[in-house]
Length: 137
Image (tube, rainbow, N blue to C red; front, side):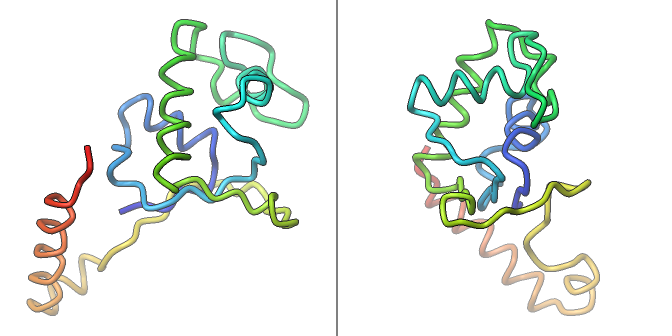
């Protein structure tokens, strides 16, 4: 499982197939928008340089390699994250999180714990099985 710390970079990784959306526990984003709202979406799409736009002076052009044909897929991933409750936006609550150089955190036991403690490894394997059985997709 992963916790993301950047909306634009995490969505980019999901769209590019580097990360499976099923492996995302939550994305704690610096954004404050609703991907279902067309006007807000247009600002986000252009702000991150989607469709080869220049991007905004406040955001990195994280989506500059996505063409206008990719916009529907990028927005669909964004809406899926929203609908699944996986998009947390602290700015909606007055917080101002900063941009970090890293943006994925792994959630789960370390390899060392699994090697040192067979019960931890077995519990993690069982969790993975149950998580797969409860997948809604």
